Length: 485
Image (tube, rainbow, N blue to C red; front, side, top):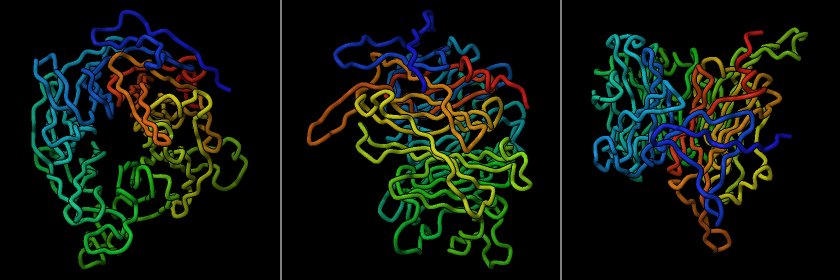
């Protein structure tokens, strides 16, 4: 069983770095770590953080951070700005440098998600330039030129959001294929019955978007009736090769769907309207689907393909298999909900996804239900690149910090590291009402994380604590440092 190790935060972090809050009086908690160490940190101007995205821009490492709703003083401009996108130089991870903040102007939801493509990679991008795709509040998706990360320049709006028949308007998590320019945007389309629908755009030339199609589960299209499948709608799409892995529902009524990408983009060639939003047109790209229990959602489905199972080496058939790592997001403070988990699907037979393993953090290992805020999974890493991919999966777990899972044998998921940051004076309270009694507590809320090719983890805190940059140590580090077998 894992032991908890208390580590002290290294002295001498750069200006804006976080320091532990004084303990006592129930105000916050200290740092906890296992096979990890804190490398650097930044308070992100006290903005509630949603998603971190590390990007290589020439010799520099730039981190883009999407934020939740709110506002804060930007010392670089001297103005109070609506939360949008933070831009940091993390070339020296022990001393992050805050370069710029791009305020959101599209309403009260901030600018939570970020994607970046280099012009050199995009089929019709401008060489030497870098482009950022983000939602602008709930009102639109837009592109910025971030070639100079300290001086972002607006390029254009890709699309304005519509509304559902009940008046909902959303944006959410995008996936941008830098090699093709195809962008899978999540947001509201006029008349569609769920607030989050897939909008496919060709952004090969970021200055000239071309709409390809809108898509969701059959029963979500405007002329449908009856129950709406997939809860709140699509949360995100992940592309690998000629497949798209879609997760719907987020926290409840989840659905996981596997699509043939070519069929999605081109539609049924034998149909009069190949890309029509009809039941047949929406069913045509689907290869596999799994409907989850009503109390679990589909937040993310990350593919792990061509995995050689060592114990199956002597089997004639299917010793190499394909998998999906699926997360159901926790949404209730102080465990006032069903327990959410992560689980692995075997998709070797894509038409019949089969759950074969689960991973959970034991509540008793940290008395997490009593700590305050959410306890449970939110989101796995998005990186499909070495050194993590195929070996380790990092998952944000709200008040249980970041958890790192050995996935080399997907049938036997094993935690090999974790890191729970210390709270600070900035960390905001989270409240819950239990048996009619309201209680507010201060706890870390690691919202999302990402990893990079240096083996570092970037943790974003939604309770205003900021950014934590973490390295693996000991046996966990040995896993990603090991060469190919």
